[in-house]
Length: 187
Ligand SMILES: [Zn+2]
Ligand SMILES: [Zn+2]
Image (cartoon, rainbow, N blue to C red):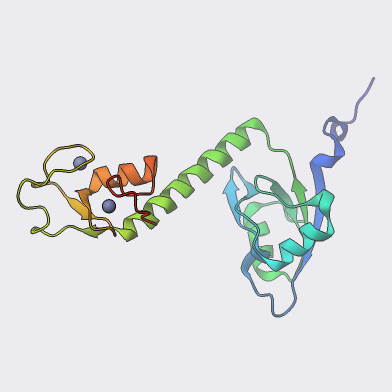
C-alpha cells in the first residue's frame, strides 16, 4: 500500500504557534531563546517572557518547551531569515517541531550543557578573589590537594578560605558550590 511521505510522522509532531507583541513588549525575539544547531533553531531555557507565558497558558496542548525546534517563521525556513523575523516582525507564525532526531538531540544537549557549564564557571570565577602573597606565605597548604600554596596561583573564597585556583574551580564546578572547609555557599 502506498503511504504518503508526510504520514510517516504523527501530526502532533508539528504544530503552529502564533505570537504577537504589543508596542510595550519590545523584548527581543519574543523572549524566545533559540540556539542555531545544524541549520535548525532549537528552543532552550525557561520561558520567562509574558508573550510566551500567555501562549502556553492559552494553548495547553501546544506548549512551547525546551528542546523543541522551529522549522519555519512567517514562511521563512532559513535559520538566519527566521532569526531576522524574530527581531523585526510584530506578529509571527511559526511551525514548531516537538520531536528532534537522535542526532539533533545529541547535538542540542551537548551544546546546551557546554554553555551552562561555561556560565556556571564564569559565575563562580567572579566570586573568587586572587589570594595575596601574605595570605599564602608560611606553611599554608591547599586543603583540596594538600600541596603547599607556594608559587601556585591561589584564590580566596568569600568565606576567607584559600585554595589553589585550579583546585577551587574544579571543586566548585564539579563537586559542590560550597567551601570544602566551612561549607559556606559560594554563589
Ligand atoms: Zn590544591
Ligand atoms: Zn570556607
